[in-house]
Image (cartoon, rainbow, N blue to C red; front, top):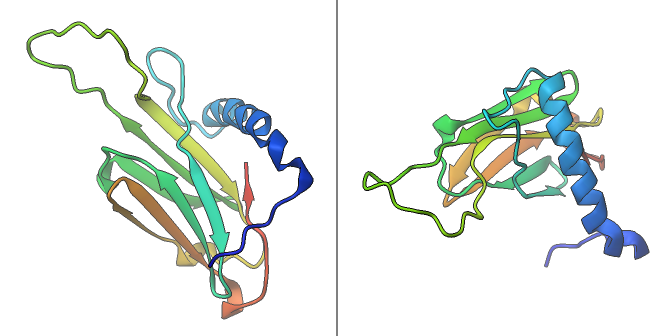
Amino acid sequence: MAKMNRTPWMSLSEFSEQLDRLEDVLDAATFGLGVGDKGYVWTPAADVLETEQEFIILLELPGLDLSDVTVEAKAGDILVWGERRMERDQDQSVYHMLERSYGPFARRFSLTREADPASIRATLKDGLLTVVVGKKGGGGSGRILVE
């Protein structure tokens, strides 16, 4: 079973996540990532884990293909961005509820020195984007920062 690092402060994580999502919106503009016509960027949920050989980033991107997503190493960061387009019905249906996120999305993860940005590989299956970043020298314990 996988270990999970827990701290007494994890109960405050929801507030922190909301601040992170706001920061991602601001970062999108900084990195030149486009913002939607309505001026927003949504942030996919992510998990980050570490093995002896690599860091693994999992992002929930249901309904997207790998061609809709860009994964790039840039200035010590992993940038993931793309866009989920809303498919409108031909019969001009009236929506009574619209909770799913559409438009551009962006996420940034800062790497530590142990990460090898040249080793990035990504797959997307069943709505889950898996980004794998190898470690330099193939081992050691590092830390990937989610921002």
